[in-house]
Amino acid sequence: MSDETNRRTLPATSWAVLGLLSFGEELSGYDLKKWSDRSLRFFYWSPSFSQIYSELKRLEKAGYASSRQVAQETGTRDKRVYRITAEGMAAVREWAREAPVDPPVLKHGPMLRLWLGHLLEPTQMRELLIRQQEFAEDMRLRAAADAERAKDEPAWAYPALTLKWAERYHASERDLAAAMLDDIEALAAERGEHP
Image (cartoon, rainbow, N blue to C red; front, side, top):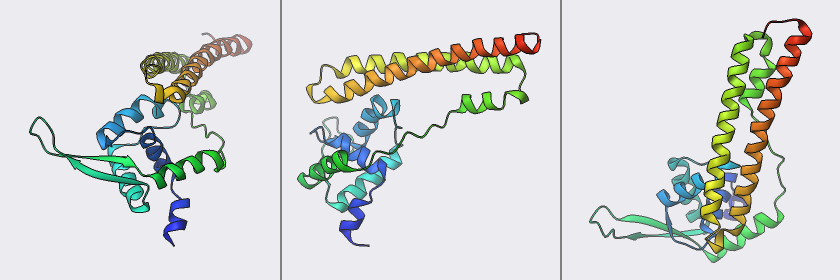
């Protein structure tokens, strides 16, 4: 497979890491992980450190990123920082503009459990939905806090909007879990089951 073909078939993780580099700063793998935890995790996923470093190697090989060693002021080990290249910026811009948009894939553990509700005790199902409400509210609050921090960074205007979307998404997840609790109560009443 030619380098050109390799470049066009980069996995989504590569594009996400390259996208993080597109904000114009030199970033270490640690910085990239921190940034992905503050944004990507709310709507896609946050790659592990090993995934980030693997993708950085792939991006360097493709000519989309470059790196250099930087001496630490604290006397600890030097760190490697990465920067997007002009070719990388052009590639991620082209990908963002022209790549087909994949439909979201929903892998929803609580929904799968609800689907198997006939195998659970009613109290287990209620507990699961209450935990889902709590999780969604926690994620909503975290997305809101990260959106608040991002709004002060001019380069992060669109990530801040994405975090607002994540905040709204998790609020709707919280509300859907509450509605499901009501639906379970209605189903139990319809069947004459004791709550």
